[in-house]
Amino acid sequence: MRVILQTGLILLTAYILMVIAMPISATEAEDQTLYMKRLKYEFDNRTFAYLSMKKAAHVLKDEPAGVFYQAYYDLEVVNQDIYKRSAISLNFDYKANWFTRFRGNAAGFATHLITFSPESLIKVIVPYIPKLEQLRDLADPRYESFFAYIVAQEQAQLEASQIAKAEGWEQGAKVLRAFVDSIDVDKITVMHGDN
Image: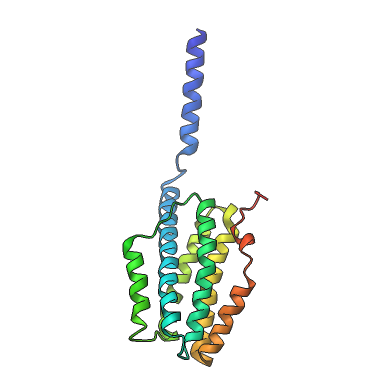
């Protein structure tokens, strides 16, 4: 009798744990899938931006746009540190695939032929921000500072591009530099409640 009772208790406990671990609804599973898709895309995007801005900053160093692309690259250097630290906290095993690396290098190489205008950057950034806001909203609240930063750095890129379009490359670069100077990496990558 005692063995039957213990077995029943173990089965009941296992059943309860399975139910607790299952998504409450299909939406929760869909949200998790969307979260992972957006997170992977954003990490790929940062790798792409890092590689392309590194090359663009070098190629355009003596051009009027050079100051802007150098400031943009400086932001992406900081982003690499923040994203690597955060990937560890998120238990997100990110590695850029060959296609992402190829695209980043190809876009950087393209600056030998053309300089991407602020308008072209704006056209890419504007529709991307809502996707980052969605990612932030889907994320675990313990990582709020990192996901708020993801949105903020993209908004800084947009503002800098808009200023560059209206007032020139140097003015846009100042916006990016001010944003980079305001970053406190340790505050962004620390989980709330783990201090």
